[in-house]
Length: 133
Image 1: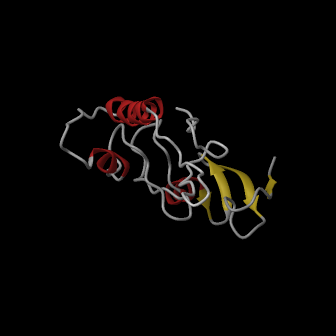
Image 2: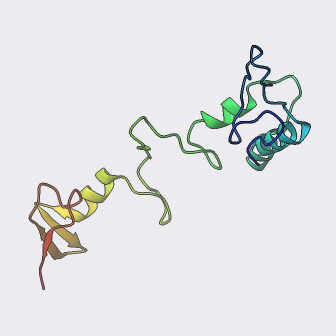
């Protein structure tokens, strides 16, 4: 992909021009339109979508898809994503899962051994903890 570089661009941005001063607007080139088209089409086909000529919501459907295999992760306005509790070793773990698994009565544990005690408001909300040897 590239920024528009055809006649009438202003610093590689589109310009409406100004007819009263004779300043032309940006000429939309076939090169630019093809680049944009192919970027979008490659995203869709890379995610397994079969392109359909008169279906004009394919990109939107992929972007807002539910969290299923091989789809985009949807984040909220604060950049957070939500996940289910892990069921396999390589799954992402939620804070609740990790806290329940490893934080017992203010102590970080591994198996039956306490490896650190909490010295801040939460063990995961701070890098400060007192290690126990």
